[in-house]
Length: 97
Image 1 (tube, one colour):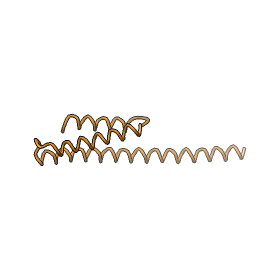
Image 2 (cartoon, helix red, strand yellow):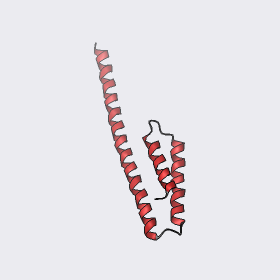
Image 3 (cartoon, one colour):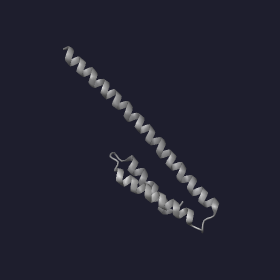
Image 4 (spheres, one colour):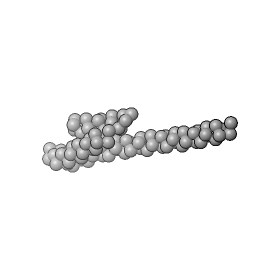
């Protein structure tokens, strides 16, 4: 895979894993990724098979990132539900005592 394409994918992964994701930065990274993919497709020195391999690898990585994001979202939603339930229980306890 192209070195610069790898670097963009690593940067996207790091941004997605960050505690606080910068939406503007991640959008810029995805634009860079689109640009790199276009350059891979336009590169006449690579065969169709090489291009297919590179794009398949990118697709697989993005699918993994998406699955990880879904898992994190599910965990966060579960935590928020427990927090809300705990707050309601605490409020009811305080009202009854």
